Length: 277
Ligand SMILES: C[S@@+](CC[C@H](N)C(=O)[O-])C[C@H]1O[C@@H](n2cnc3c(N)ncnc32)[C@H](O)[C@@H]1O
Image (cartoon, rainbow, N blue to C red; front, side):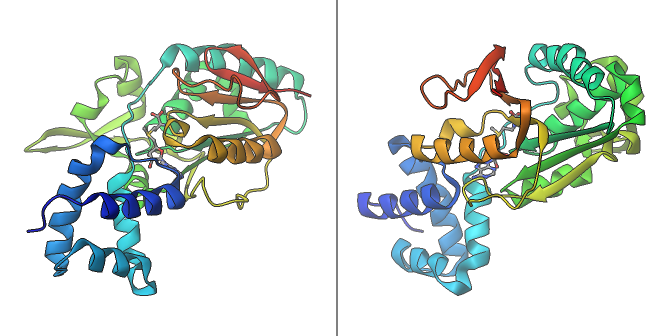
């Protein structure tokens, strides 16, 4: 089995990943990356990292690049993450937005970097629960990610009980069906009424311009940009600005800020920004 990536090899893989999906691998990730790549290269019969690198860069290595991307992305997420931010958005901002917009009764939301669907499903459940009138609206949630394994899980919409610990009990009863008891415990499937407004699609936030038309009323991009370099963040915000409706909202992760990055968005709440007119 291959040993530790040497410095040059590590920098090559880091550059490749950074360029492809914007994730900047830290220096201290050399060991963990080596472990993943060594196992993989060994399985595919490569005798050295350079031969594997050349393969991944070649046309024949396209699928392997997808594997690498799926390995590198951090799809850490959970249902009802930052629920105070979501409650304020759903209970205050969205109703106010709906009140102003008499016609057309349309609401467009985009979850960019949706992991295994926890964020868009949470949002859909909260909208159904808190704004019953939203059922009569043309409501669509576009949920995108670059990691195709995460998207597969999101579309499956079935989660082990372990992953549903953060779901409040009333939501669990109303919006999930128990489907099976496996060795790992009980699994639950999200009900159709929660799923039907959501469309999952693959989209790499580092491939510009995005193949989307907009306008979006709300964009979620929570805990995704933290791994991006400033120049990539700026380009991404350029695209968000283009796609957001005037006075539309951009929601970031609780530790993220646009201070000094883009002045065209105004902070209006907990990591919630509004596009200035
Ligand atoms: C830490 S998770 C955050 C998930 C969710 N937004 C949340 O806050 O719970 C980051 C997600 O961003 C996705 N991601 C990373 N780089 C990306 C890129 N270049 N394009 C699209 N998605 C990306 C990862 O695959 C992962 O699912």
